[in-house]
Amino acid sequence: MIEQSQLIYFIAASAALTFLPGPDILFVLTQSISQGKTAGIATATGLCTGILVHTSAAAFGISALVYKSALAFEIVKYAGAAYLLYLAWHALKENEQLVSSAPIRENNAFALYRRGIFMNVLNPKVALFFLAFLPQFVNTGAGSVPMQMIFLGIVFLIQAWLIFSAISVFAGTIGDKITQKPGIGKYIKWGKASIFTAIGVKLALSHK
Image (spheres, rainbow, N blue to C red):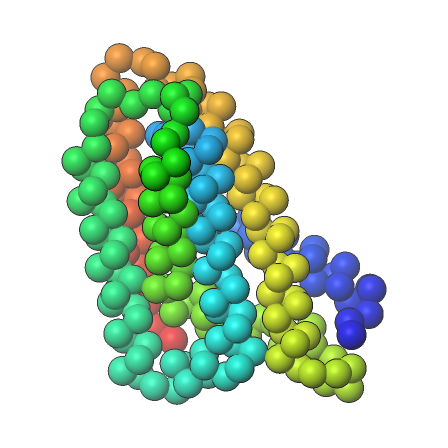
């Protein structure tokens, strides 16, 4: 459906955008440093699962409806901001004794996976990004446009997961070293809370 050269260009553009500093990459970094690479990968998997929601919404016109509806956009935006502020409050309650090298329990990994999904899905800016980005690489004369957009969304998901996972391993290695230092736990939890708060406030103040 999509020419090879166009696909290569799409992957390159997607990778460049994934590496740009933003809420998702900051979220993966904070979880990886404070809780280890497994926590980062679980978070990254959740964030990338959310891409499937946004891709489907863009392909079938749901994102366009959100963009046109000021009320829908505001509801999703404030829900996302409230969730991030909840994560900030939750970070402040964390135990200061952080040991990122300890194995993460299965239920904790699923909680981080679920958290990644919520954070991604409740950000209308991500929905609008895919609504604007994916159609640029669609060939209207080469088959179903929605299916092409879904295919591109899956390709974006795969490259984003690979990059986020690599970042998780790198950040987790750093976290293994710094979390062993006495008293560092309180600074890490305050740092996480500050990052979540900043992202939440920025989202709440954002416009279309």
